[in-house]
Structures are given as structure tokens and as C-alpha cells.
Image 1 (cartoon, one colour):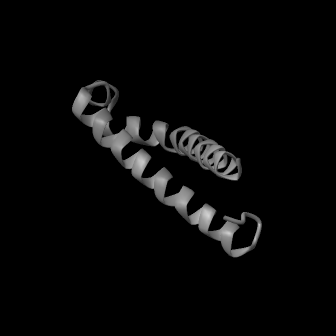
Image 2 (cartoon, rainbow, N blue to C red):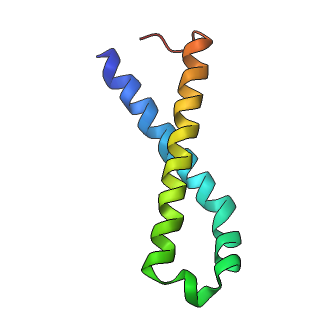
Length: 74
């Protein structure tokens, strides 16, 4: 049962971090590439690949900090 809670925490953290990353960087990326270019598949795929890798890395780091601080035990 404990593993289910840890999985739910990880998924929730990942979703929240991805949403915050998107909110913070979407306008910048759209301005950097231009509206017309940003609507193309290649550009958006590149953006979302980076967003997911960044969010995954931050999530792993946060889970590591929570484990190190003895907030999570597994």
C-alpha cells in the first residue's frame, strides 16, 4: 500500500512541475520561435521533449531531497 502512495506522489509532483514549467516557458518559447513556427509539429515536439526531460529531472531531484530529509521512507 505504501508503494501506491509513493507512486501517486511522484506522478502528482511530475504533473505539477510540468504544468509550472509550461506556464513559465510557453510564452518565451512561442516568442523565440515565432507563432507560425511554434505551431509546427517539429518545434512543439522539441519543446515538449525538453519540458518532459526537465520536469523529470526536477521531480527526481525533489524526491531525492524528500528521501534525504526523511519525509518519504521507502
